[in-house]
Image 1 (cartoon, helix red, strand yellow):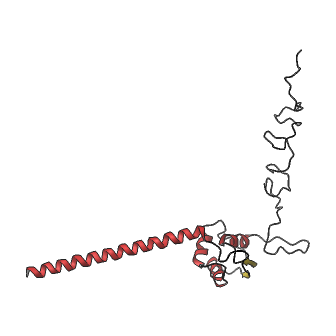
Image 2 (tube, rainbow, N blue to C red):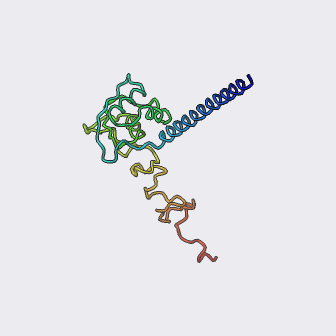
Length: 192
């Protein structure tokens, strides 16, 4: 009788340890999956290296963001539609994808594709095609440091102004703020 009690306790403890080990292994696997998925959300590489393959896709107004991800996976543009959906929800492009026909490439990242599909299509005034809603470079925003066209405040390469610290300053227009300053040294030869 005493032996049966010892065996029953041993089996009970062994079973409890087995259940705890299975739960621990399950938690480790779940943690590994979550970490890997989270890591891929921010570091996922394109499906193919450059130059890739162009694929034409059509986004309709009745498609959800999840359906767009599924379509991109079916077309071979992304590896995982759930990953694309997570990237989209965590990005600034969530709820901003526009309906239209887009030429995407297998060498693009998910973020590149989102940027193209979220761009507001420009109206074509002279009959030229924008292709994949490409930016012409002159968006008319004041201070855009990379367009070099508008010459507005903050433009890094306009060469005009003479503000203090301007690398293109010619030293004639009063960089220190003195309207009578001619850029010369006023301390020399001023003995009266």
